[in-house]
Image (cartoon, rainbow, N blue to C red):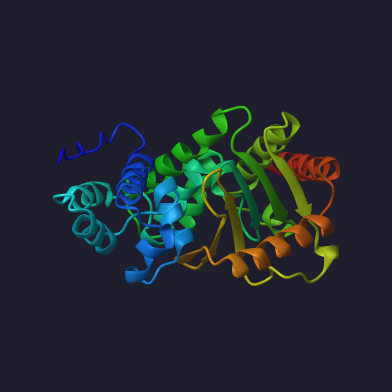
Length: 280
């Protein structure tokens, strides 16, 4: 039989690898559930691999090569895609984020990466890695700013973020950096490129007090949730768990300030930082 050609890394490699998996599975007459069973993964997980929203790990690639007699195709391409510019705990989430049609994020401590300015991102990495050399910090900042190019498209993905009030009150990098960062977030909101809300301290307790939450939706795959802690993160695809995270996010939005009032608050705090910067 004719072997598929190795993937062009300049294209969308995850989507192409997933399309090849779907083609091989359908040609073999297997359902997603049947293909996933020997690997102890769900049919929805196989669907996410096929849609390019989940990373294909080597153990899965080897199984697919054997199942479909692919001559090592999946293994070769999986190894080629294994290196990521992102930390291990975030790499798979970044890949899912890149193909998402909608992203909803609750940020308890920091401005979300997609909304950060260069100097804010640099301050975040510098404070988080006080002994790291400058070239390492530069690489991390460049990768974060590259992610923000997702917002170059005027409509997709839909990005809706709820910022805890701590995000806008915590000085990261000093008043000048904060003034620029908050004005950038507000400008994106004023252009209607993103939806921004602020969950004020007055809102009190809520379901997501223990950490950040990112929800990602795609056209051809089940929704995902990404939970992040200190130097760790987990991508969750269990439908019941994701439904609970979606409920938590909906309640956060219901208790946060409306977008118009949120933008006014963000701009007001930005002005306070700018004024503080010019104090003698």
